[in-house]
Amino acid sequence: MKLEKLTDGILFSHPVEDTDRPILAGICGDDFTLMIDAGNSKSHYQEFETALAENRFPKRNAVVLTHWHWDHIFGAASATGPVIAHRLTREKMMELKDYKWTDEALEERVKAGTEIEFCRTCIATELPSPREVVIRIPEIEVDERLILDLGRTRCLIEHLGSEHAKDHLVVFSEEDRVLFIGDILFVEIYDGEWYWTPRKVERLIDRLLSYPAEWIVASHVYPVQSRAAFEAECSWIRWIGEVVEATGSLEAVRERIATDAPGREEEGMEMASWFIEGLRRENESKVK
Ligand SMILES: [Zn+2]
Image (tube, rainbow, N blue to C red):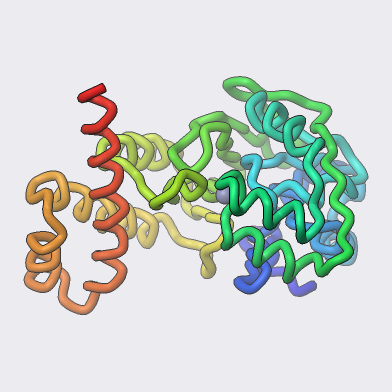
């Protein structure tokens, strides 16, 4: 597996679109490596661990899971060190532990609405049938925060949660000034129409920008973003949210984007539709 160097102490792998493999990252300590996410399969985890060892990262390690989604946790059963996760991630994994992962079982869950087509397809591509999935319950539970002193750097693991996943953690490596945000800045995908809510996204962005990070690493986005690029992305998301809140209709948003951000209509409109759905749900819950 080919790794990229982000700083002297951080290496990471590329995301893979077909199988939804997220970026995995290793933070090198004096005699200990912290890995961000366990990957979507035994081979994903093992390829990454081997590549880190080839790059002389310490073999002693721990893995922190950013959130409970399959692509971040299936590899955990193969981890050679302890696994760290948020309380809610552990709870969710206890639930997943009893699931069957055959094609038939996945099909049933898609029909019942507890699994989504997108994940089913990616699971089948990464792990063709017959597949074995072992869910390992993380040994170390985080509630609000955990600080790991790796010697060379300290890593701050904090629970922020988001609409994408309530259990979501972020990891900040102080010496490297790198913030790992996983999928935190993405929409809710498991509950029907995809959505996010302008004010919640706004608060989340403020929180993410409050870390003195020079690099921001999201799980499925490559290249990794510099602070300036991430800030620009956040402003764009915020702006769409504001336009949606101010106008409330997709047509009005379309006109605003065509005038103020020509060339970005497609991605802008997709994002706007998520915000519209978020506002719709917010209003619905107010009425109740
Ligand atoms: Zn996710």
